[in-house]
Amino acid sequence: MTGRLFAVVGPSGAGKDTLIAAAQAVLPDLHVVRRVISRPATAGGEVFEGVSAAAFAARREAGEFALHWQAHGLDYGIPAAALALRDHGKDVLFNGSRKALAAAQGRIAGLEVILVSAPPAVLAQRLAARGREAEADIAARLARATDPAPDGFRLHPVDNGGDLAAGLAAFLAVFQPVRA
View 1 (cartoon, rainbow, N blue to C red):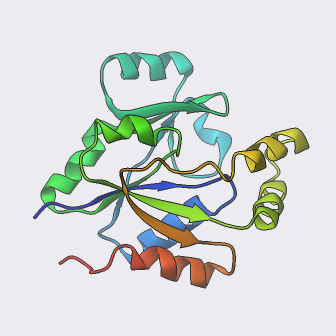
View 2: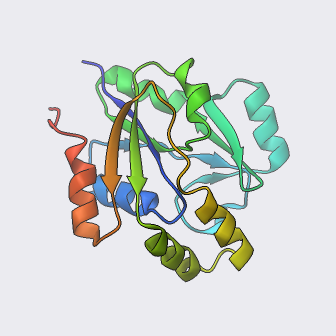
View 3: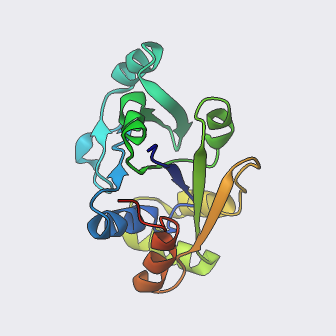
């Protein structure tokens, strides 16, 4: 049996990492891909593989990524080897980017998209609370918050604007029925 592959996308502050971590705690067979990002591993936030920009470029040129993109001055990559787990019946998900989905259409068959959203006021509050960006950077992220996901994917909208329990319930519903 082939597993399913999900890209989790949405604006900064929507709670993608929080929902992914909570879902992984409830669904231990769910495989979450560890992204490769051209920033120090000590930068905090999600669990990721931190590499230099030069190392990222070398890996990209070697074809190690199923998908890669640039955002916020950084390079992001999804290792191709991690996606192979779905060939062994595992559901696989990765924290992606709405901008990168167009490139994924021709390269990753069967990709489904979980679009996490929250109201602008909630996004602004969450971005300010994490303390990583200046006000101008937060304003730029909020301006991109309504960018749509491209057509052509099975889309699963998840509203994460309220409490975590409600957002997690909607997120977990995407994975039903549970696979043995």
